Image (cartoon, rainbow, N blue to C red; front, top):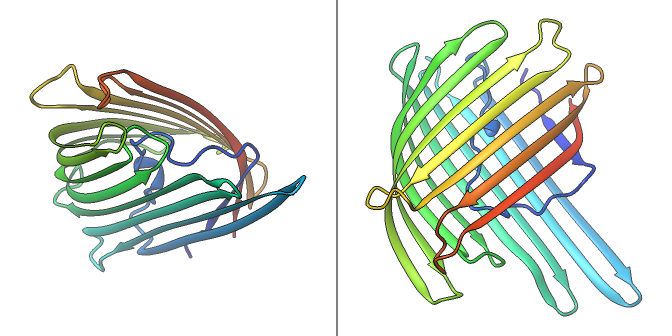
Length: 252
């Protein structure tokens, strides 16, 4: 039976503070599980000297595999709202759909669509569609490696300068995962590189390192470090963010 993972953050990060999301950490890395559905919803209300703040968070992860295990459908969704008496402090959403078809033990075809919005960023909304190849080029008992390359057509909207841009972009990622022989810890590292075809100096990077440490059969500690870099925003400036998350994961 698939396990449902509920993550309780000890240090709550700003969701979607960068517009490049690591899909690798959302995949269910198993060829035997046909259906997985994880859904979380949270509401928080606080009153500080008469100033009210409400926060709503909702997320969905679902993965479905065909009977022959060759076709995989992945759907991710997230919504975050922080509202105060003075107005919205944060309003963001993210939706990603992906189709994966296994044509060989090593090679898979992928197609995906994605939309996301964040009122705090220079690029408030980005919609894209793409397709490419995914290679499972390392598959050992304790070590796995994946390599992917895709073409993306994207639309970026910036309210800051009142512009809408349409770009053709490449997306390449490399992901490694190591599980200790005693299964006391899991290390995962993923790197994304997304340049424009017409201007290679305009690119985005995402580096994510994740550490999982099981405390017992149903509880684990995790730590995630993200570094995001955008070489050229619509304002013709550079933008980077770094984020450290730590929390507990419960498996039921």
